[in-house]
Length: 294
Image 1 (cartoon, rainbow, N blue to C red):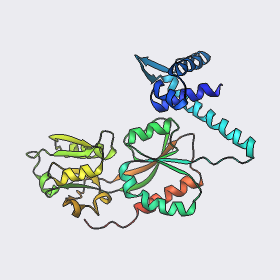
Image 2 (tube, rainbow, N blue to C red):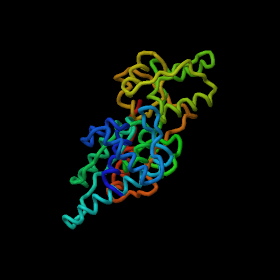
Image 3 (cartoon, rainbow, N blue to C red):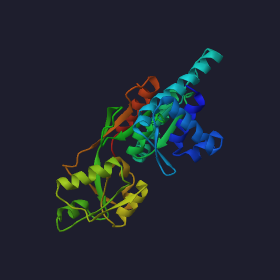
Image 4 (cartoon, one colour):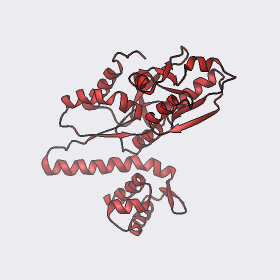
């Protein structure tokens, strides 16, 4: 299979369209379009569904993408082996949710860097749906995320439990006790956040209807709005253990609010080697650190 055609196909997927792919590849958009057509002709299937100027992967394209990525990786590995007789080490590509990056990565990476100082580590911070998609597209090797729905083609290994708390400007236990008269505003991370889904399911189990849900893209905004009296938020306890006083938040941990389990997620055709296993172990150690009182 022609490497140029495979690189063009993967660039269109990674960049989200032919125009951006052309910029990355350093060619005209018409060249990208022609190469895609050539690849589809050779395969005898349409890799994209064309909706006007938009390109969306077809079912055949979804199935073909992992193979294209693997073929390109093998070509690079073979070339490196032929040139130097030593396989060039690939970087470890890791993705996490924002909360995990804030709570555990600093502690885990400090120890991990001492053990593997030469390893190149590439980090992505995204919501759970985006991390799963990046894994399936071979753009990540490993992701750390609370699981909401299992995705075909991905393996899930339980990592550690994350206790959750309810925070608000006033005592959240007193606010929740007023339901159903009190219909809280839920302040949460943007759509796709597992903690948001868990919070909504927990409130539903209590038959508490939310007046509305306010979405934000950072946990600083979530905590700040909760401190301003705009509603309640359900967040990992460790995220607020050192910030509750700064934000002047009050917190409670209801007995029926189960902890969130964080998972190590990777493709079924990829198994963690020595370095990924070491990083996973350091993240587990970070999660076992004693919790500060709220």
